[in-house]
Amino acid sequence: MGSERKRIIVCAVDESDYSKLAWDWSVENIFRDTDEVHLVHVYNKPRFPYHQYLYQNYKKMLQLSLEHDKKMQEISNKLMWRMIQKAQENGYKGTMLPKVLDVGDESAKQRITKYIENSGASMVVVASRGAGALGRAFVGSFSDYLVHQVDVPVLVAKTNGLKLKASKGTNEKMA
Image (cartoon, rainbow, N blue to C red; front, top):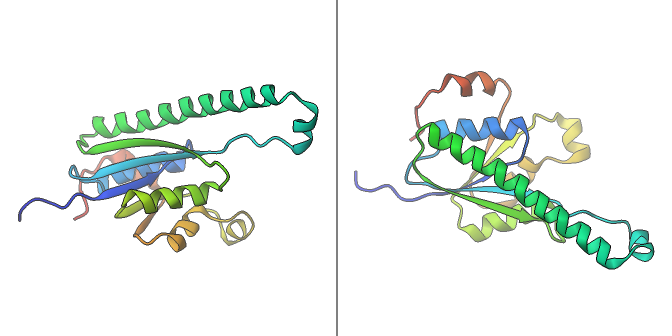
């Protein structure tokens, strides 16, 4: 059968239980040892109201922003290394690359979409939070956005009842 083609899979992660369950399921069912998996966590920069710029020292505002960035980097790295460690404990031997991105002047949706386009991804994995139609209409759905904006397959891991499946530890990989 020869060697398998390397796939680049972008897995959008956050601190939610939904994301952790989707990650565990993907490790057990999607990822192959020949894959290059990019764990991507996007965080928001603090937004200060305009009037704070007028009344507070600019250097203080900059310092607060830098402290926030440092804290978010630490939180993101800790989250992703826990996920990587769990995948390795479950026997996954593929390449896993943690990527921490700040949104800059874009939304998190736009930032991760750009990352997906520039990474050469062949697939995206994202968790569904299970929002109903009304919630998606008012807040919007990250997974819906990705499905409609990127040019590669997007696997939306629905986590309803996934806890039971993820904890059983089936080691079957999808072909």
